[in-house]
Image (cartoon, rainbow, N blue to C red; front, side, top):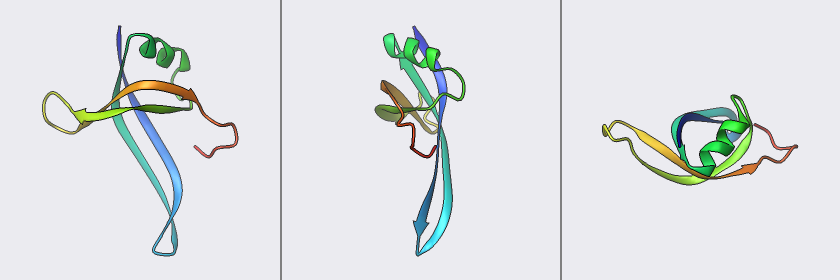
Length: 78
């Protein structure tokens, strides 16, 4: 089983002494048992994702291959 998804990260950072909101959304894929875990997490689920980045097959952009899903800390900003 393979599952296509999108991962989104958002945070507040300081750049050149000034606050800035940053966000990133990247296409992702999970395979096997990790895909089942990701499916259980559901849309909008919060977790820490580990894996690797590679080029998409069409050569346009990157895709994250999720190999580990860990629960997010409850007090962590999303």
